[in-house]
Length: 232
Image (cartoon, rainbow, N blue to C red; front, side):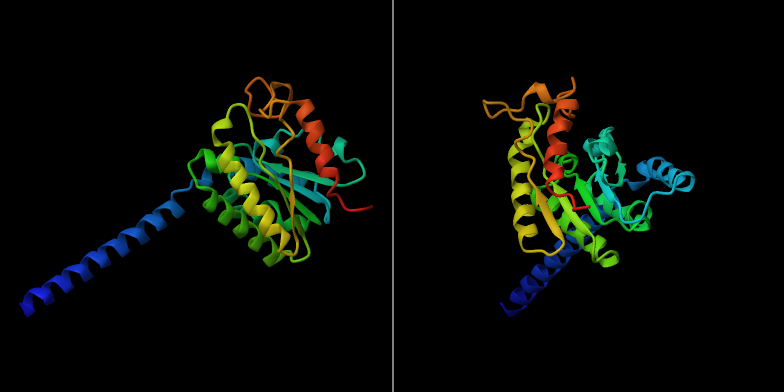
């Protein structure tokens, strides 16, 4: 009887050890499986631009996914400020964190505006994971640039990805709460920008792909961002 109990305890210990190892391997695999190298051409192009046309220090840096990359009127929308666009379409929050040494820190920006997270959810990350990635981004920025303000441009719904709207709301809520108690972090609400009178995303604000803003969408986005700009 005693030997059976000992054997059962040993079996449970072995099972627990196997599960622990499996979990760690799974977490490590998820961490290293993200393909940062696919952005190398984009980042290298930014670095080439920095050599031929060095961006100013203390500017407003906009970074993130396609909403930033496709914002072609950024400088025109904020003519009283020096702005830098470092958006690369399709990117996730972890990509901006990963490449911060190359496309954020060298510029010593006064403010960093991040618009990202939608692609993360589309890639099946949970809102909790996206929120954790955002906190890692903030930690990374403030470790090197403690005086830099980080502004999260909230997620807003699109026609093409309306199915993930609830998850986007959850991410927004998490970041808003975090920003309210974290120095150097701001939350900019843009959720209602593309919504029509029926509470659904309206084609009026999107390109034909129903995912990216058109000129009308960017006009409203610029209006929201202006509320966060520092005084000259």
